[in-house]
Image (cartoon, rainbow, N blue to C red):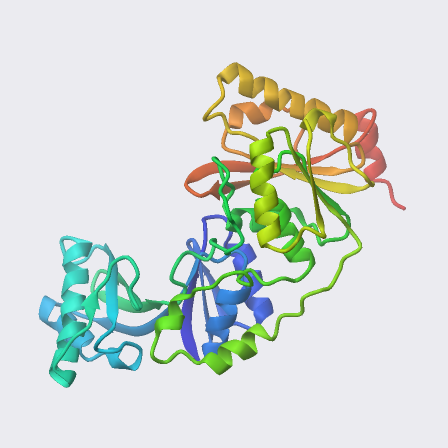
Length: 386
């Protein structure tokens, strides 16, 4: 049983915990912006391939205490890095420190790099090179006081980079955030999914992937562990073969945008994901949109105001609220935005709300139950026994 840490955004620990537990991870434990878990190497591959809310998966290779620079160096010199890294390979070391004897993370990372490379020189007469941009092995050091943990980054590029985006929207929705929005909503692929301000189609693609059981890493071509000496290609193939992808689902995915350039981006991304048979895209003003069937789930990531004036953004959100009320009765709507004041202009009372991050932006994700007529009557009917 190896010890791993899956990183995520703040507020998504519960969703990631559930994903890992469902995949068979042992001893899952929620941390701050992460979930620790245990398993074998298949579990490491599985977490990278299937987890929708993970940003990266770290494998702890060594844990030790130290009281001096010399002890720190010696502990890392003793780490058998040659098991995963070739003398002709490349490495990088990233360190985080809290209340440590080291003045800077940079010094800790340089000392760790020296220890690892000196071991190679001692045993093989040559040593790996440093490549900060694309190393064969990326090490992470977490140092708290006199305790250190050495991790290997198995993911490489952040796992939010799924591999299906040909083009990016000017204000893109992070794929991990989009997947988490869908999970938090409780939608299980049991009704149509609509995004009437679809931008680059991230929400639509993530929803279709969940409904069709397409793994999060299905389109991805690179992982950090591909470059490790101990990468097991046969085991990796067996893990990928565990995917139970559906041929079809009895629902539809509808996306629209008023901007033709954004719609071109959406079409390119949907085509790359090979989901054009499931996702219907058209150019349309959100204010003229309608659900094809009831009930449906409506989810959107409207502009946050970076390129609009205050008056424009408040009017836009007011029109979003009016459209949902008038055209989407019988549906549930979900909106994410970093503009808290603009969200108030929607004029609908959210039934649930969650703080979330979209990249570095602090956002609110809100649910609205849409109905026709009086709210008091709707609430009374909702709570009557069947």
